[in-house]
Figure 1: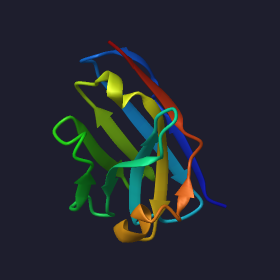
Figure 2: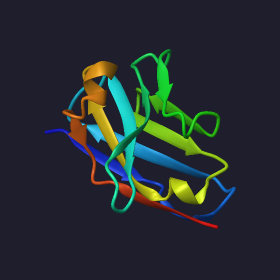
Figure 3: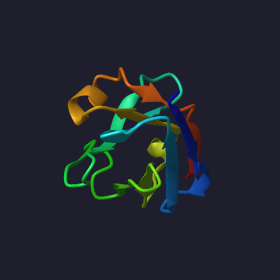
Figure 4: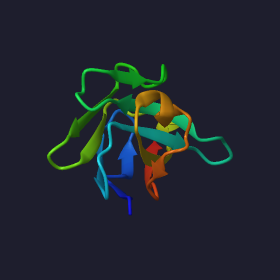
Length: 120
């Protein structure tokens, strides 16, 4: 069965950086991505990447600060987060699906999430 295990969350000061990782097993995942959910808010799209890495998409709120990448040999997707802001505080979830359009439909597989807290 498909398993997604996120890591790399933590507490960081505003302006700092974190790198999230998500190791996937149990399949081949052509689209991989990240969503986040802040307390009291709906889960929102953050970033997604296709198999080749040639197509990457970002939420407007993170463009220029976050970078998504993947290592297909390790079946792992990463999210490098720079210049973090308090409004980036959320639980970050990894998700995988057959293609990028399907991934944004939120019907793929999900990890348990990793918490990111940015202090001001």
